Length: 546
Image (cartoon, rainbow, N blue to C red; front, top):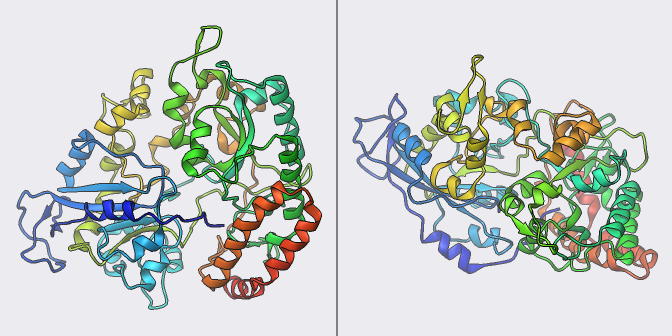
């Protein structure tokens, strides 16, 4: 389900004040030259030595502002004559509708969910002719995969940039949803096998009872979550994350998990844990900033979320020296507050598909070039250049002999000092430029297991060793499955019905979790749900799957 959207005119206004761009085209050596007018030109001209600046706005919350003079960004600009100013959504104070209605858009958008609205409004540039001119960019997807992005008018207007593998999936992290638990909790429990929701909450309860406070005296929070609940019921049944509905990958049966028996069991369990005081009493009222703030304090023992939220909001607070009540010093990382993922199931012994191997094609999110961009050719040329090996190394490894070294086998590695620098926010702001929402390959040398392992905290290393795994992907233990052509199920259908269902769930799920009469309220929820015409959504989904 989509997260609630809160209108913030101030954020849209501040974003619009940054929007401007120059006109230019790319030469064969990845440099750009200015065109004589503001019209798009597809022919390169002589190099004028100008730098072309573009603006990109991302609806993701995990980006950090770069310093005005970022060293690696400057190196990329030297190679391409292009600089991109990245602007990020802040907290929950952002409205996609407000952005869509803005008079002027930035040159580029990365929209995490709902990008089709900009196509419907006629505000995006088609990619087709540029894909034919820039082979590195076109290689991001096969022809069949590009067709999944093709719209009713026959053109492609956006593409996702995450989870693209040039050769093979070498990722060591699970970027999808999971039930996460702190490594210290598993160590305290002698690393038990946890497969079910009951086992998960049983361990959280016992740990919190034995360890009710942090070293500084603040109380632990056994479990909290966002108001956005994701698709846990479907995945507890062992299915992959298809979105608002799920599809049995073996039979193509479409299942509405919103009213399923597993949904009832799941919410009933949360209701029971809430009544015991295990679930954060303020879970339903907290915004994104409040939620990540609690995680950053290290007090939350378990949560349901995705890896990117944890990885982008915990590092600084987890490495900061803290003072315990007895006067000793510690860090949250040393304490074992880092999280590891669990792919829980309804019953012990079931297979599960929480992790998607080889990446997921989500056709309702991605990077797009807007009709307010004065020179799309330059932007697409830049996208193409970003995928070259030398710029990929700059983006995700940095500068050789400064940020990384190479061994005799041409393998990349970092010293402890280099690793510490690369993870330091102040250093990153002045030096690191990943352009993280722009086209990229995920199976580069940056995914070397040795470097991944070296960057883990000691408690997480001990956890992996205890369970006989090497990374987060093995820890979650999902079975491999062949993705169907429609996977994940594209639900850009009957938006009115989907919106009604989302609004209803946002209203009712907190009621059900906090209810003093769950059974009665569940029946009321089912009645209200039927009034949202879910059969229309099911019927439209059937057309896509067939």
